[in-house]
Image (cartoon, rainbow, N blue to C red; front, side, top):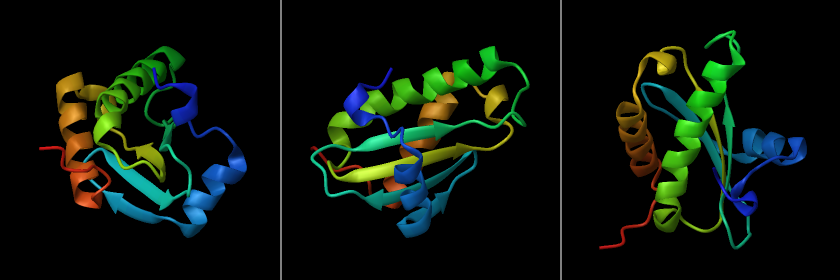
Length: 116
């Protein structure tokens, strides 16, 4: 689970990401992101009922995605708000494939920093 400081909860903050932010699409996800001027990055994960009618399935996917984001937090730039939208088909993928796709979308948007 993501720490509270890294969660994007307020509707006005999410709306501002949609209005001012940029979008990038990968196989399973659409990432909308914008700079926030804070000392930490914040994320929201949106999983539609079109993915699954069962809350258990949607929450399982949300936990996998949040865990993958939490692993990447040290590499993610410190001033980003991001909303991750999921596409159908994500419920059929395993955790490894989801993490791989997240890595690809983060590299594509250059949200992660190279810590070599």
